[in-house]
Image 1 (cartoon, helix red, strand yellow):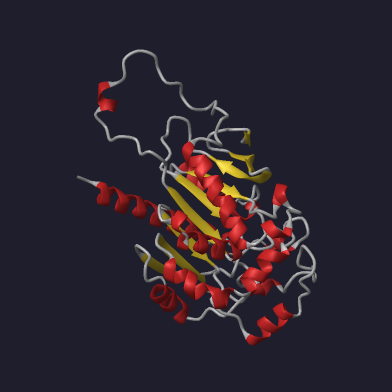
Image 2: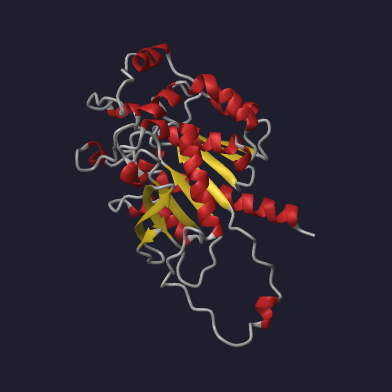
Length: 331
């Protein structure tokens, strides 16, 4: 792992996964605070890890908020984005991305990817251990992992939750999941040529496709300097275009707890009041399912002024998942 570590701050990081560098942003709790677990944040299509943290909007940062509440938060650039942009198309698809992220989680939770010491952590004192510490609960073998994901990243997270390797995930918080598309949207997708490595740029969709009404977000996000955008790898586009057909089977196999959020002003795909009910019915094997309509936001929830409110809900759900696990393992 390549990382410049500063507890309580957001740092650029890079991880070598099977010869490919995955870049991202990392925030740790303050020195002396035992992390409650690892929060893995997965961005959507055409975005990057910066979706979860912008220096210009620290109050809405999932990384700063999560670290302040005791979590190690890693917002990763998915394979095909950031340092791995230009990745071979065979490794761009969602199944290949899931393999890479499972390898990342395995390395992080076993310490295999965390070889760089954290200079901000207090050193272990010499001499006899503190008797009161010895009487406390035993350290878990691995830190719990909670995944929060958006849009295309949420489709990926749900695939991870449906995989047998995802059974031990603490939970998933997903938003912007395209359970269905309008006929017009399907026609638009069908018109995209799929012979290239990236989806051709059309100059961007109208702002109201991804944002709520004026005043619900920073208008600088619509400027060239303020946008959080990146080219969309073609293989993942093809996978997500088919998601209304493939998601029913995926959802039926998801086992971790799920927090499912629908944006009040979702316009990138149909998302009426029946969607939360359909999500609950479809996630029949999940440990628990909680649905929520986030007011005052469009599709890109974490780029709105209500981002902090949304992130607090996600972190509350993660804390409840911790309590549920603790209760299930109590003697």
